Length: 542
Image (tube, rainbow, N blue to C red):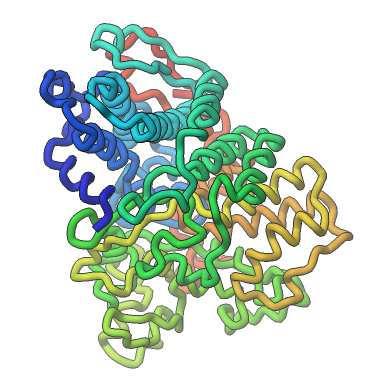
């Protein structure tokens, strides 16, 4: 068992942020202010690994896909996704305070660690510097996500008192971004490359992870030169890490291939100890799932091109409405369960999933058929396959790691930035989009660079490539926000497969989404925080 996971389990026994308060001093520190605690590197590492554990939230990882146009959540309201996607949220919506508190809880743990690490006697200096760098990465991670959702937020770099937390003001978004990027730049030299960690430390933050996160920060801030700078450091300098695309797209998300050459940073889990089970409500019912509460949308399914690389609305693509899943991009079948998909059970049995009403040959198979919104079967006519663990025990309690940053994303970021700088050419294409499509299994005609494409043509190609390659990995909502197209894709009906009524020329209409561009590009500062601190100003529209 990996050392990181071992310490995560131990740290969970006395998690320093067991219950988050509604202010910025969200964790008790009495356990860690005693003089006799900071007596060894192992005890310090236990606190650091508590901070690691506070980064991970499987519910947000999966459910946030339904904040975008890639998925629809039609049962319940976990993580307030339904409320937000329909535009019915306000500053009292639970998700906002929960997200705010979880990030500041993580920041609190980092500050406790940083302010006590020097108290550990006779600690190896290289190890100490590495652990400090890991902690600073985690703090930068939290601040990046806070400012990405809320805009300007309170920025502080040491543990603060309750009184201080109730008077601190918001720093600007740019001030937070500057801090995050400066931190990530500063810690790179103290972090090992991925190949420098031993087997007991696999999953820890690496030099490559810090550079890759800086690339993502630059991407979300439309800093194209910054994106090219950081992605180039990953692509061309092996001293920063040895990364490459994993040969199999489907295999990338299987437990036997965890920590493979494509993974730059992931949330670490281990079967029977640290697990997630969100697939219990996302997989087909005949696979042992409980009910289906969220499914991919028709809009996402239609985004996958034909195996030739041509979009399904291209008259030369060969797309057949009566056989819509034939000769499609293989990533569709690796990500989404559609009618007549093949499914592998834990015992290795491969069988067909029947979703179109009235087609199932047996009563058991009929459980997967679309039965209409509000029923146990799929709400959209599709199920999720990506992150299904065929070795999963009962109730889908999986130890499969959740990949947060991978090398394909680096290539896609690099391609997008080069195009926005009007520097996309055949060489850049062949280093980025081409290998991704080759790995996906598209036909060779889809690999080539088309010199007649305009910058806008390339923009659409790259954006769609990003969508299908990274589908259901929690990134789409951030992409449509930074592209400022949310009002175009998050307003109006949500479509599922073409079953049931009412339908239009796209497919079944499930609900209406609402996105107000004057308000919804930022989340509101939680009302509870405003009540505690008069110096916090609310975002526009709330």
